[in-house]
Image (cartoon, rainbow, N blue to C red; front, top):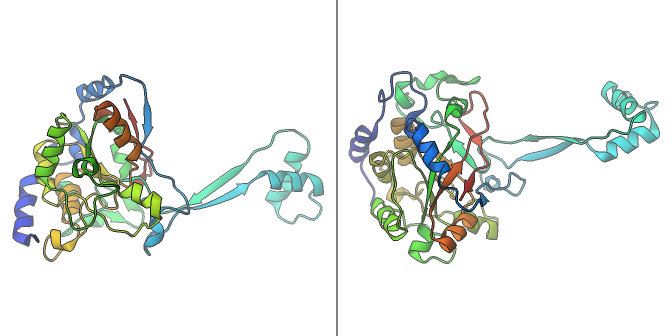
Length: 332
């Protein structure tokens, strides 16, 4: 059922955290991650297993289906072929000063190296949305002006501002795929509701507490690995789950799908797009993690019946960025 703008504004007033941690706050709900919470998370490590939650950053990534973002372009700038060629043929034919210098360097000692670079959108694969990523009515989280994000980057709420929080905390996996008995992933048109999240938590015998990072398994990334179709839709959190996250003082939420929330306009808010993004990032100050690979974690949790873990997921510290890559790990 589609919500109205009146429903949306009521929810926004309910979840808005502006001024909660001061007028200058740029951490939002990460403030819920206290030193006690970090110690609690570390205490969850029992068997010493490390599970990667990050997808590959490659030419075969999910962004190939979209026009305004592209998959990463990986380029070698120095390789073994360069070294052998330069040493064998020497600098006589070289007109490039850098190449000539490299040739001279390689010629008189055994040291060799390779080097490379990458060109990509910062949200090309597994990533965090910074709070400066989404706004409405010319305001970012905590009332910062939207025009403080310029061609030079985000003056307020850039991804680098969260470095003091890690990001590390107690992670909790909510496995929607297993709960629904799906073969692979949660298909479009079936949004995940707050009541369903409660049902899953109860079934898994786990509670969501202040400072936790909720990780939602929809199976989308597993499906993507099977098909290579980055544009295929899947279900996600219903936009009203923002209130559920707010009441439980969740520090952040991540999922294995494109947008965390359900993209179906029929399950959104009339006259707008991605209402949960607006409520979480702009009103609540709650970061969203997208494109996480949760298949191995879901399998491990199902095997040992433990759905809580230490989550370590600091974003790449790109100054002024509105999102950044992450290679998160769960430690159990």
